[in-house]
Every structure is written in structure tokens, then in C-alpha cells.
Image (cartoon, rainbow, N blue to C red):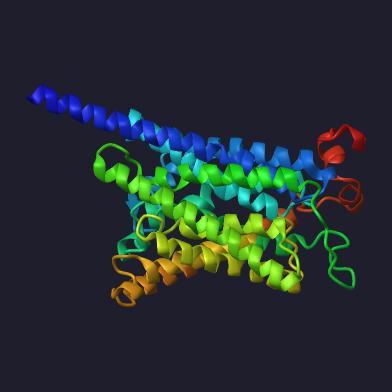
Length: 411
């Protein structure tokens, strides 16, 4: 009997690990999704640069998270603020289960870093971006992540962010906001009046969004970290449903608003509406109902449209809508957990306690990312430089930064 129990336990652990590894692979596949969205929504002359940044920030992020980031985020808690640093994933780490968690969390860290790429697209020095990616995955992301997922002070208060609306997406969005504000708009964007600078391929952008939507089925359900047993697999299935419904609602809402407001159903805004819905549901995908997920997606669609307008009015140039999609929608989705959580939510008779904690968490993480991002990008600007010269920006970053182009006909 003891032997049978042991075998059953081993099978359960193996199934859980397998699910985490499959989910990690799906989240890693989001990286080319981000690359396609950013490339499609920007001009052809900068495509190789966009692809290179996405390729390198995943590589740099993987190395830095293994080197130090994971331990800062998940190491032994030091006063609720930071985990005990432990170089090269050594010390108490290193067993098979820990390796599964390491790779799963690594792909999350890379996601936070790559969000910044889109916000500062088409005018950023490649070396500056890689340096920023280095610090984001080694320090900025892991510390605030520890507060929520590593046993830090926000988790002690009951802050709920199941898969990272705030931990991952808002951190990337706020860093993107401060970076694009410091670097300034692209040439010609706000000369007298606002000028639309269309991306070179909505086809590529749409493919990227579909890839991201698929990858999110690893991002959110994978955060259950288990698939053995009826309770776990039922939870995974429910998260699939809430994730999908919020994305669909975000798409339809953004399309409808753009149709009414701009007299045309915009594909670009609809694509970002899907991403806004996905980002917003990520915090509460495990504890909201399907109806609640639709409400969150609808709100995210509104936030996306009017967030883009607000930034444009402020002359903050975000070529792919990264700040609105990840920063604004991530914040709103996290706060709405306090309203729509089926246990503890205000609309379900839970009072305002959870809503207050969710709001507090959103505010302090935003303050952390914005302040550290300001120091980081101001420091880069003052030292190695943040923006490419005018001629490089006008003629395209591909040739000047990389000596090659994504399209031969541009040479």
C-alpha cells in the first residue's frame, strides 16, 4: 500500500511538472508574438531592430534571471521587501521541481522586459535598450515581484495577482511610459499637429496578436502550477474560459468604440483590445466568473481606446500602444479583482477590504516601476545615450544599428 501511494504521488508530481513545462514553452512562444506585433505596428525600415531587441531581451533576461533575479524574487524573505540573493540558482535551489519553476518564471521576466521595447520603438539606441533589459530582469522586476509572489509584504496583506496583471504587465507598461516620456516622440509625430505614423504590416501585427492569445493559455492556466487531480484540472479549464472571454470582450469593445468614435472599425485598435482584455483578466482569472471576465474585458476595451487618446493628447509617443495595453489595462484589471472576485469581491458581498488592498498594490508597484524607471533611463541618457541621431532615425535603425535589413527591397 505504501508503495502504491508513493507511485501515485510521483505520478501527480510528474504531471504537474509536465504541465508547468508545457505552459513555459507556450509563454516563451509569446516572445515571437510580441516581436510580430511590434514589427507590424512600426515601419519597415526598423524591422530588423525590433526583432533583434526582442531576441536579445529574452536571451539577456534568461541569463540575468538565472544569475540573480530568481533568488531576489523567490529567495528567503528579507523584511518583506526582497529575497535573499543567491547567485547562479545555487544554494537551496537546483532540484527538478525548482528547475521547472525557474524556466516558467524566466519566461515571465522576459515578458516584462519586452513590453518596454514597443513603447520606445524606432528611436532607441540598441545598446541602451539591452542595458535597460539587463537591469529590469535583474533588479526592478524581481523586487516588486517578491512583494507579491515571493512572500513579501503585499502578499501578506492579501493582494491577489494570480498571473501578473500588475507583477508582469503593469511593471512593463510603467517602465515603457517613463522611457518613452524621457526619450521623446518620433521625428514628425507632433510637428504642429498630431500625425499618424502607420505600421508597415497589419498582417504581421495580427499574427502576433493571435500568437499572444494562444500563449496566454500557458501564461494564465500555467500559473495554477498543477494539473493533476480533478480540482486542479477543473481550475485550469475555468482559467482557460475566463482568459478567452475577456480577450474576446476586449476585442469587440475596442472595435465597437473605434467604429462609433472614428467612423471605422479599426483593426489595429481591435487587436490591441484583445491584448488589453488578456492583460486585464490575468490578475483575477482564477477567482472571477465567466460573466465577470466579460465585464473586465469590456472595461479593458474602453481603457485601451481612451488611454491611447490620452497619451496622444499629452504628446507621449507609444508606437504600439504598450502603455495602454499593459500599464493601464493591467492596473484596472487588478483593481477589478476587488469588485468581481467571487469570494471577497465587493459586488459579491465581500466588502471593500480586498478592493482597498488591490488598489494599494497597484499604486505602490506603479510608484516603484516609475521611480526606478526614471532613474534607469535618465542614467542611460546621461551616460551612453538613449536616442539614435536624427539621420539614423530618418533613414532607419536597421542599416545603421545592425548593418542589415529585414527586407531586401529597402537597401
